[in-house]
Length: 218
Image (tube, rainbow, N blue to C red):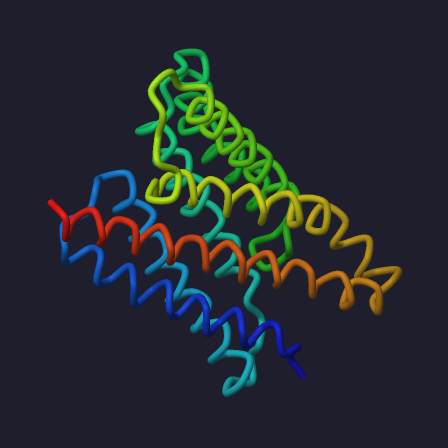
């Protein structure tokens, strides 16, 4: 039986998907368009996982998540490449875009199996995205020209990512150990993870609404 937070997460994600569709039709900025497309892809993956869990005899979903993480982290990195100004961070992002697919391929197909949960893929990618998010917020808050954060879509996307990966990286890093040795604790700790998911996609939805407001004013 799935926890109630999972269904709330699906509902919030669906709201983010619908808002992303509307924002894509309205002509939003290119960086936020990347996140909108990623949210659409996330919605397809998560509803596919839900369908398999509820209606199919084969309930395994690790393969979908392994491929999802590759697409997700590359999309996030490409997004930050568009908005971060620091040159050395730009070089780090460029290196990540080149090397992470190789790292992912080796881990998924040689170290682990495609149908095995791979904590290293999640944790490594998550730490980079967390770093990029913090760097962007630092750039934004230290800028000489003041920015209206209330209407800054990129800021709210970064805050959502920080909130999620601060919770997600430690949990997913210990996931295999917890499920093998402390299954009940793993289930309890999954609730804060789902809550962080809910917060992140709520902030993504707000970011898309900000873009719609800007488009309407212009």
